[in-house]
Length: 315
Image (cartoon, rainbow, N blue to C red; front, top):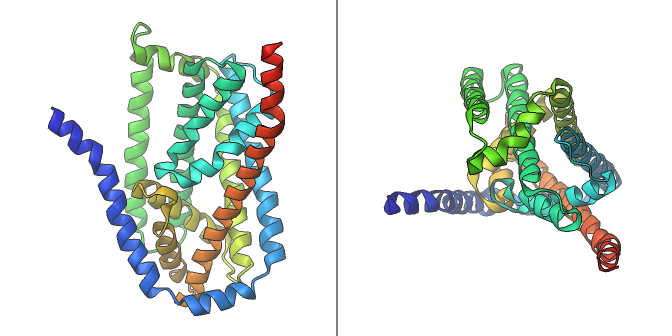
């Protein structure tokens, strides 16, 4: 049993290392760096920066509103502005950690400054992740099924989508049958209260889809700034496939993996290889812009809000 546990423990890191080494080698040896740098110098940086900042702030607001509505459905009252800064501050960790696992730290951060119940916090995080999974897979199915040029067969995507939906159904059934006396039952008890509210689940789904749409707008603007014009369906297909591959790669920040996926996908949208590589680097810079915006939120919260809360708790 211990050997099996150790094997499973090292599977994800091994997969991540192999994927990173392969993709990094591909990027370093196959990307036309001189052409990429020259093209980036001629990019529309005003459009890139302004569009990135606006879409990032809207994305933070929508994700925070989703968390706010979700916590309210779990009978947890937290001021919206605190959720906003907690959410925005951990986005940089979400992007930089394997499988975007760093987002879980927002629960501990919120517990530290508000005293929120840990079970409610992690239950809300689990619901958010489940909603993200269903949404991005649905976007992938809808977008890819309308694109005959995309290399992934529609039937394969649909089968994977149905399989994961079946898994979601199994999880939900397990939640319903879990006893409250077990640790799992205590952890998912808040989920049961949310499950009984149809309006809460509908709001959750709509806000999740809206957040992904804003991300797609940000990607479209980033590509537009380097003279890559995609249709909205192509943008959604690119976003969904890249996100899924990046998460499954277990590579922190999907470094290399994202660039290879984007460049190869763009070539199937009639973009020449060199320009597709420029697009991949533009989206990487867009990710760095998100990290910068998240870090600025963290610093602001650290300097202003955290000190005020500490002074209030001491008094």
